[in-house]
Amino acid sequence: MGTIGPVRGADVVVIGAGVIGLAAAGELRRAGVDSVVVLEGRGGVGQGSSSRANGGVRAQFSTRPNIEFSRYSLTEFERMHAESGGELGFHQVGYLLFTGTADGLCGLRAAHDLQRAMGVDTEWLSTDEVLDRAPFLRPDGLLAGTFHARDGIVDPHGVVAFLAAQARGYGATVVTDAAVRSIRSEGRSEGRSGFRISSDAGDFGCEWVVNAAGPDAASVAAMLSLDLPIQPVRRNLAYVEGPPAHGPDGGLIPMCVDLDTGVLVRREKSGGYVLAYSNPDDPPGRETTVDPDFLPQLAGRIGRRFPFLENVPINPRHCWAGLYPETPDHHAVLGAPPPLPRFVQCAGFGGHGLMHAPAAGRAVAEIVTSGECSTFDLRPLRPTRFAENDLVMESAVF
Ligand SMILES: Cc1cc2nc3c(=O)[nH]c(=O)nc-3n(C[C@H](O)[C@H](O)[C@H](O)COP(=O)(O)OP(=O)(O)OC[C@H]3O[C@@H](n4cnc5c(N)ncnc54)[C@H](O)[C@@H]3O)c2cc1C
Image: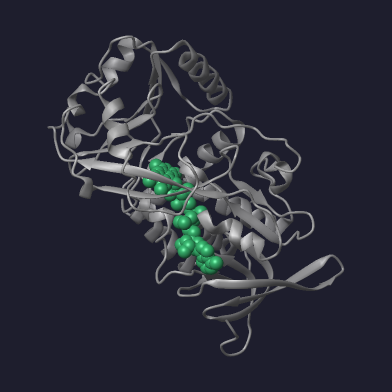
């Protein structure tokens, strides 16, 4: 793809207008960066993984970096929801995690203790307390659970719309139909580097590049010969109407996570339930039609704890799938690789990119404006950790 018109200049070009790129663009402008351009390959914003998410927001992770990101982002979601007059659709119904196995109990206890040590008010629940919160669960063999009341669900489209409006409102330029085809690093002097980006919407010159291309981040990194172990993995969701609601407020229930089967169940505000199951053995791939194995796998598991959903028919046309941008340790990659200190990678958020977008945006803005991030410890997320074989594994992956 050749140049269309003259080369346009920017301080920072962000590649990708999903929740991560949009959050980064808004925060960069808010932090005082003069000129921020977002280049998005599709015809609109938020049409990649961000449009397929389940909308879960939780602080209940098992590692410091993910809990730190959630703690920050939860507060931001509360602010954004209030500021938008409720358009984020943020319902703080809590996440309820539970288990009936000794291994599950052990992992749950360790995660709970770490969350509490980091100032997150996660509650430890006995079997009876789990059932008080979710009386519809099958109780057989249930051992314990945890609950964090500030967790909840958002409307992914509301989040995209808010972040896009915020980025534009702060003065970032978002260009759609602008797939990036190549990036060249040029003009290195006094430790500074510049970039020339060729896109479907023309060429751009900039001081910094932020790679926020989600499941395609590896191919963007490869444009500068960088190896980024982010792979797309298909994930599926199903929507079922009925059975009738449990309790008041439209029957909203906590996001229920059966740690023993990996099944998630939540109630839609407008009625019905969203069901999820992610097979940990699914191979990487770019397919986004619903996996034919998904419904049988879900059907084989859901009855273990959710008897009221066991025989509810699921219409395959009410299912959808999208891509998790996955890394080997289930943590994002956030930072610049040493040979290119102004090529910031901000991708690989797996199943928690929607909820971590506010923190990601903040981290990118601090890297660009101060050369380092002071709000979060980004060392566990550095791009070189894979080559150094220094990984911290997240186990709360659903
Ligand atoms: C079924 C499902 C359920 C999920 N549930 C949750 C959940 O409950 N909670 C949660 O927090 N997360 C959830 N996620 C994960 C979440 O959706 C992702 O982590 C998040 O959307 C990633 O955002 P992103 O901006 O990095 O990627 P994307 O939204 O994919 O955005 C990347 C953008 O980059 C663009 N792009 C790519 N290459 C180029 C290029 N060369 N030039 C220009 N543009 C380019 C793409 O077109 C795309 O718009 C779920 C995901 C799926 C699929």
